[in-house]
Length: 88
Image 1 (cartoon, rainbow, N blue to C red):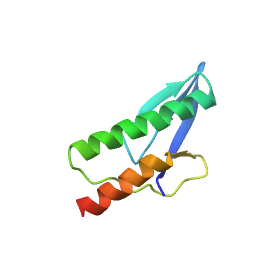
Image 2: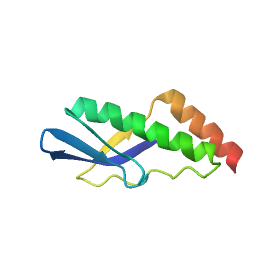
Image 3: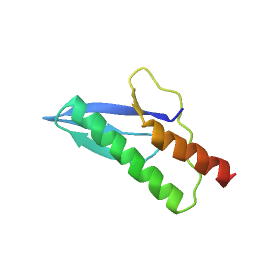
């Protein structure tokens, strides 16, 4: 449901993550695993701010071949689904 496509780009000794559907999300880690962990946290933080401001949640776009998916935990997905149902 809520898995956002993201770019993971190696820059020096870090992996930089950006999420086109959520332009506020930019983070990095020193390994792929850490970059994924930080990306999930950044997406959750940004979506929480969207909810706080009562904004619609952007739907994840289609993943391009050069992208990876940032999958959100089931509890977060459930909260987003409820929020969107109430928002409509």
